[in-house]
Length: 519
Image 1 (cartoon, helix red, strand yellow):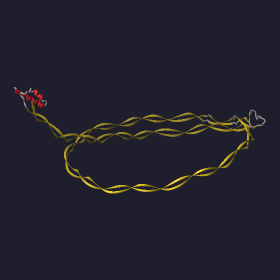
Image 2 (image 1 turned 45 degrees about the vertical axis):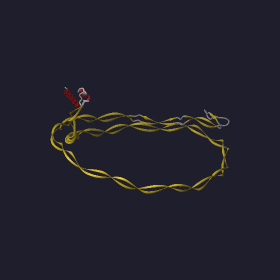
Image 3 (image 1 turned 60 degrees about the horizontal axis):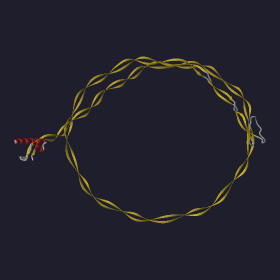
Image 4 (image 1 turned 180 degrees about the horizontal axis):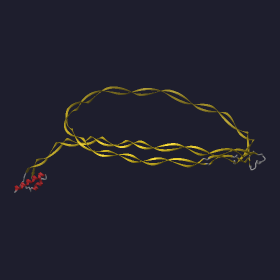
């Protein structure tokens, strides 16, 4: 019984060790209580487990690449061309002829005669009187005298002195010496090695096969039909109408307008005893030795010329020719082109390309560079500068100015003005005007107009239109089919083989020792 229990305990411990779930306490409890009376030192078993084992394998991978390949094919294209076609056109031809037409014109005949016209003119009669007026004028009298004026002037006196000024200057003194400088230079040393590199090239292999290609061609079919075409013809229509024209004229008429009555002021000499009226309705205003009289004066008449229009309507007959359009019809042949689809078969060569792997060897050179240290010596000139003190003397001049007083005398002219009374006499004239009536005679021209009938002959142009048949050329659009080579881009698949490193893992059985203890 005890042997059976111990065997079962060992089997359970091995299973738990394989599953990695067992712990020492759990194994002891699961296998039963462990007593000091029957201790077990160490139990060791052997177990088999699966462990992954990985290795890198070069595997060939195929990849599909699409290349753009150009193919030339014939494509049917249609274009519209112009074709010359003759047709008949009715061209209007106009002819102009002249017809004599008589008409009567009322011609004005003018006659001028002189008529006497009497009118009265107020003629002014002027009278002039000389008079004198005395007045006093203050006349300035100028006198010039000299006055002495004394004043003092400060006169500058300049003196020049020569002096010396001592100063110190730092003068540089240069010295040059050579110093050796050691330095290290890295000198390159080149070595060349020849090596080889293997690579795979996909070499294209072309195969040509023939493929039937079906395409549709539009074939033109021409048919001619007669079509009714309208056209326009011009026919002349003559009408006679009466027009009233104005043949009036302008006449000049003379109108006399009397002059206006104006008030004027006239100077009249007066006596010292009083004022006597010169004329009726005259008011005198008293002044020194003359008086101002207000007199009513009529200005001379004015002659006004006026332009007056005299109406003279004249009736005339006018012949007018106008063209009336009339629509007529004619039969014109019209050619129509209809495109009919036609299926054709063409053998098109198709070239296929297959890529074949080819291994090549390319030699190349590897150049390596090694830097070797080399010591060099260089002489460097060094210049030192030392400042030496040097004393110098600079002469300079000092100019001083002293002000000395000097007295001067100046003669100043002084002008005085004194006003002296002087009596003067001014002569003046007084002009009086008196209007005297005077009768005059004027010859006035009077123009009379008389209308006289006069017969004229006029050449009137008459235009006739005649339609003349004429052959003209016109451009008719025609559809033309052409075969045009077209370049077509086609994607061609190509398979590329390349080697890629792939890691493969395999489960390998591994023996794992297991140790179980019981305390």
